[in-house]
Amino acid sequence: LLLVFNSNLSVCNNPPRQPQRETELNRQHVLHRLVEKATTIMRVNSMILTLLTAPAARAFTAHRVRKLSPFLTSAAAERQYHQLPQPHLRRSASRLFSSTSAEPVVTSSTSLRGTPPTSFDDGTSPFEITTPIYYVNDKPHIGHAYTSLACDVVARYMRLSGRDVFFLSGTDEHGQKVETTAREAGMDPQSFCDEVSQSFRDLLKLLNISNDQFIRTTQGHHKEAVQHFWKVLQDNGAIYLGSYEGWYSVRDECYYNESELVDGKAPTGAEVKWVKKEDSYFFKLSDYQDQLLEYYESHPDFIAPDSRRNEVISFVKGGLKDLSISRTTFDWGVPVPGDDDHVMYVWLDALTNYMSALGYPNTDAGSNFDKFWPASLHVVGKDILRFHAVYWPAFLLAAGVPLPRRIFAHGWWTKDGEKISKSLGNVIDPVDLIDTYGVDPTRFFLMSEVNFGSDGDFSDEKMIYKVNANLSNELGNLNQRIMTLVFKNCNKAVPTEIGALTEEDEVLLATAASLRQKNGEGHFHSNH
Image (cartoon, rainbow, N blue to C red; front, side, top):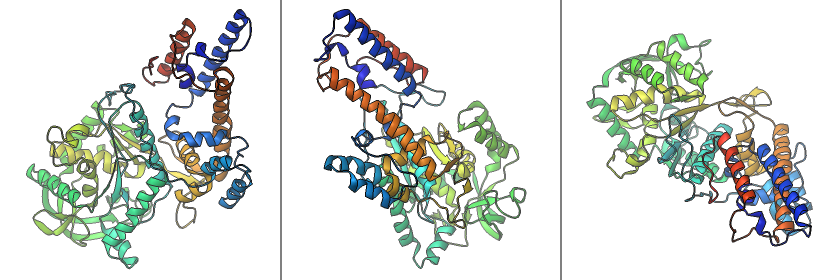
């Protein structure tokens, strides 16, 4: 659409041979229809441009490329691929039916000057966006793919808008659960982490995720940064040595109060066990209850969506107890500075990655930390919101470090209406999705199927319908109409030199600008 809006139709080299008045009426009719079409297409957020690569768009409009058949399998897709008769068509179709592992496409723009400002983002500053670092106790699943895609879409959109972006992802590799899982696999923890961490990096590449850095908590610099952060908290009087006993979930790496247990289990359904009294360092979380509530009140957009914000506020109002932040019963973690008998609580270790990836503790002017911190957006699953919206800001307040601007917690995925779990055997492997449907259809489905923040349900029927209806039919039809217009009226090419804008062109551009403004997409200028 931008191609059409920005092309002066009066310079078409092959105009229809009609009387001048009739030609002008037809031209106005075409422009009117284009604006009508734009109104419909604007319902699809402009970030669709970041979801689909140009070769994929060509695949959806390639002559005789078939739609996905119901219950299409990889084998069936391969048969359709070979049935296409012409080589160039097979190349296009392969984008639909097979995995692609092209390098991430990172596009920048010098003509666009930012995004619409909000209460938490000025629209022009450098932009750090982060996934949570993924726990390496098992291989990636659809939730990891979903979070990564969401961040990738925002990062690409910001780059297209002229923003300086730092997009971070990585793996969380310490803790009792990792140590136990590695032992069960007959491996030492580091070798186990190396193997599983690679599977996450492979997935990001397969999904064409454009992250700028992939951090691992077993890296030397990160461990040094965490130990420095500990010392800052300790020097500020926020840490003391005591003893702990209570309920702990190894799966969640989380402490729970008795009142939080549901039928003897954690709220997440994870098993809990009683930790016998052991020496532990504590963070004075209770000291920050009022400060956190005041911050939530004065920064209403700090946590989103509103339903999750309300949950966090309710939890904090229920009373915060000091948090145990070290363990002595295992040793796979970052040693506590000055006390090697203790390793740090895995979440204190993990959360610090958002700063260590920027070179913390180097906070000098001109450093990456100085440029990108505070982080613009942490995207997390709703199950780990407490750690990001309560513990993390409390740690930062205690250390005197600015808080991130926004934390967004998205929902969970189910399959065919059922909860996803290993016991049910319905875990969705994102690699299998890509093998069956292709990268771009998978990206499009995950980002468009549900309102971001809500839970979503996956089924093959929904996936097939989404690809056929929205991509093959709607997007494909739009591309075909635009190409037909260019071929018939513009000598089969977009003009390389656009002449002076006519009055009609200015009207069309003004209409396009109003549509963009209504959809919150910032400023639109004819020189873009």
